[in-house]
Amino acid sequence: MSPTATLSLDHFLEGGFDLRRQLADHLALELEELERRLPLATDTLAAAHPGAFDPSKAEAFYETAVGTGHLLELAAWHLSSADYIADTLRLQQQFARGQVLDFGGGIGTHALAAAALPQVEAVWFVDLNPENRRFVEARAERFGLQHKLRCFRDLHAPQLPSQFDTIVCLDVLEHLNDPSAQLEQFAARMTPSAIALLNWYFFKGFAGEYPFHFDEPQLVERFFRTLQARFLEVFHPFLITTRAYRLL
Image 1 (cartoon, helix red, strand yellow):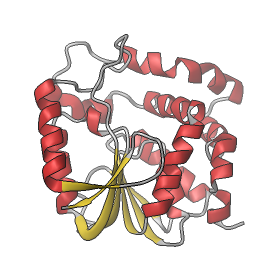
Image 2 (cartoon, helix red, strand yellow):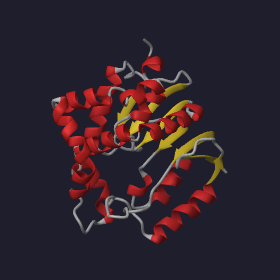
Image 3 (spheres, helix red, strand yellow):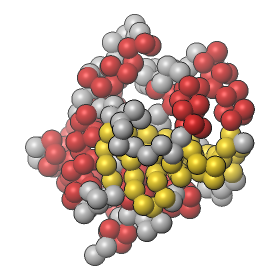
Image 4 (cartoon, one colour):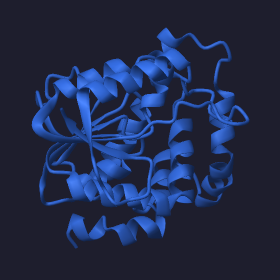
């Protein structure tokens, strides 16, 4: 069976592209133990937050401190919100082509789905967390997509193309201490006809359940001013928080 058929929307809705089995194997856990940990994953990761968080050290924290806890938290979210995430995959299917950057790609759901699309030449998965990169590399190999999906720590890797036809950045911008600067980096790396798929959630939660999110009003205002100065929204029909943008 081709990767396109294997990584269909139906396959995702059935279990996140066989996420439970793959994650259990990767973490050397029995499925029963994985199922026990998944409902606790969000609270467990939140408890790892150091309290008084120095924004300048956010990058180091995500690279060295969250470890496999982030895999579990992301897996729990993708499995419990499959219908919603399926719409983000439909949106990606509509726009993805050529050279695709998946920035902060987590457990690789969107990177794998993009790599399976015939109109996509290559997917460049970028994530600070080495545990995420190892897991996504293993998943790509499992689906026979290692020739189209490669993993890197950051955008400075010399192997990456200078420009991308599609950028996917989901559930990431709120974790950055300067999301406006990230928008500028994206704009500089987009081809003239490129599309960026972005979302954000600058909110720590009604009960503080998202302590990792930045929410300072000045940061948020600067972000929206940069967004409006650099990008024009492209309409899509899906009722989701993710938006599509092209360069102005």
